[in-house]
Image 1 (cartoon, rainbow, N blue to C red):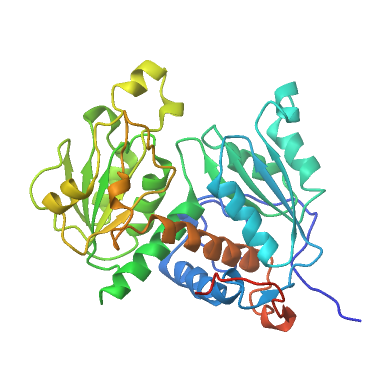
Image 2 (image 1 turned 30 degrees about the vertical axis):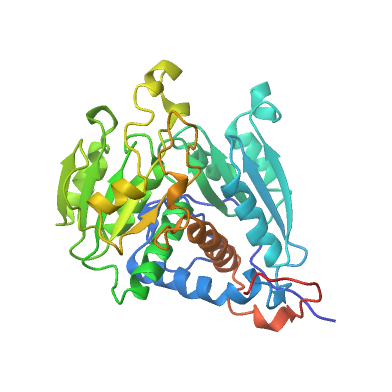
Length: 357
């Protein structure tokens, strides 16, 4: 008889957001503040080992019998499906709930009570919620590890990790590393949680140049500015896209209209910063990598990342989404303590697939 050994506990967790990750097993992943460069490299190393499974060259059943509680109380397509896919690719099963109105939270149940109940049904939980700090509050009541899938305008640690993983891969293609990077972040930097988390991770590296381009009303929050400056990085803040940016990365963001006080307020900024092939050619290097956390708003009045960039080889947005599965697979494997057991439970793929091409 073959026994499976992934990390499992129903004992209460202590919340250690600010403690650096030295051992992932059994720990919540709530904030990028938990990571140092060593922990990041560990995640990336495991993520690289996941490629044969993500491209269906092989499959692994290392998490056969394990259950992911996929709790998304805010609209999501990519992140929710990416978490579920990542867990399925490791052999696990997914149970999910979507939307606030279809959950007991709509009946007044506390996050703590929800966590106590649903952690009894799951081996690990991925959660998104519209309120800042909500996932950490939920984790206080959980008896299993919780991974933050986005909490309001606060943080999105797994997106930041997959973005950094993408940056590393894209720069390596051009013979560079992350140290010395010049990144231009454009758009809604106030409510865009992805740029908040990514900026904090980049602060761990050396000699980063940040160019932050946004309307003054949607500028990067001061705590993020302080973190960049305290880490000794170069910082330029402007409300116009002009001149030659000589940036290695152009990171475009969507206007987060769901976080504005009103739709009318959000409409003031829609389409304010657009990127198409003509603007790209005018302001960026021929090798500048174009990134976006998605979804991109392709409505005519916004069109923030034009379809005429779709054939540009430097458009990395779909490589980002592919990398997201690898990174989330790595986080599941590390958190459940099976990162060294993947090959032991390998199987052949018996159906047709062209993902590896």
